[in-house]
Length: 168
Image (tube, rainbow, N blue to C red):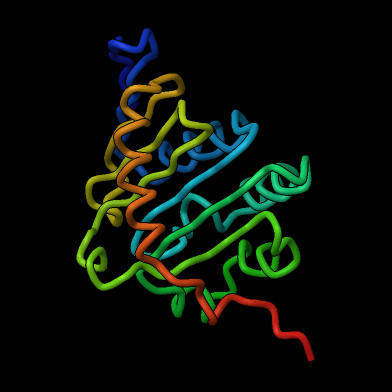
């Protein structure tokens, strides 16, 4: 059940508790994005990103401008590679817009996942595999704190060699 709760940022806190709700909210956030999408989680989430609608919107977003960026930090991409995640070929084609990194050892025990959009909106699951959490479409104060955490994780991460394009 999705519930709307007013917040300090004059936005609305949306709570969700299913895969379908999480996927719909993620797609809403991708549609809202204008400059940057940041994602952190155990893997490139298949429910949020491995569907035709999300892949199409991420492709449109990444191609919109040379300044648009998608930054992803995960613990591992092996499962994504084996399952032929739709985002991987896109990341291999759009190397100047999409970066996939592997989290450093300091952050590998984190089990949550979150997506941040343009420093204003977010989706957060405290336990990645449960698809229960919250999202806000306008919450700059909340996103600022999460963005700082993401930047620390990003700064301690390394580019993922499993998802890079092979130039033969």
